[in-house]
Image 1: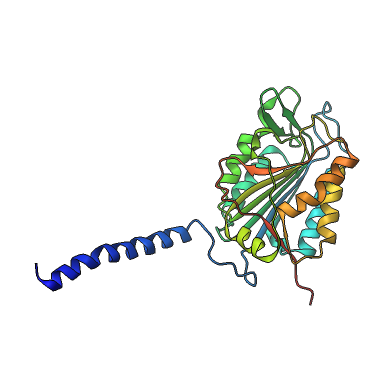
Image 2 (image 1 turned 180 degrees about the vertical axis):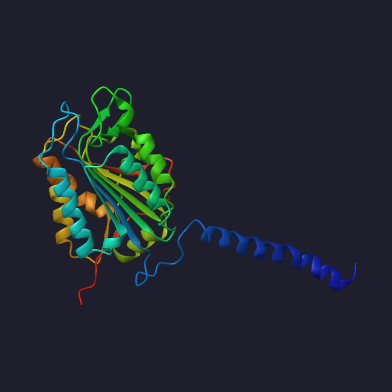
Length: 279
């Protein structure tokens, strides 16, 4: 073998390695976010659901409070954080069909660079013996599950939305099997926030696993308070949960839950609320 041929042979593995590395990096860009540029973050979308007045007389109405809570959350997200009005879908007293359609429409808008927050306030139920939770839309009927919205349906709808980060906040008895884990780990400061934003996340914060919740929610009271009074430019879902866990537990019979939504592509990232800059 001539010397030049030997050098070519020797160089081939390195060239292949470089090509493989480049291809891997190109493929990874389709899955993971590139370096964070907080001056140009992806868009922030939201589906805000409040159900207060049920058509079935056997399901107690909730004095319009969930709808008011949903409207209050929409207001703080739009005024204080990077949620533009046109990117917030509000559903007041929706049917199951309305909710499913809203998720389907959102799946056509949200890109892998974007963020999605889903909020639900209303009746829900958690069956501990079967590890099943579900929401009750406005057209739910006692004894007829056809219009109940189960965990599995919600998780499937979330899976269709290819966001970078999805955060579910549920003020209903809904926890159960939606979670893969229930744990929070926090570290210090800016680099932590950037690393968390770079990696995809599918997280949920719920008000607890009780079979009933009071009409006036202590959970949403503290969620709204912490979002309104947050002084930091970047506020993670982990930090939000840590700030409400103890006061909610101390002032109600509900124990909030936080964790990863099971089997939906969470890679250890976190949803980051970014405040609007004051002109």
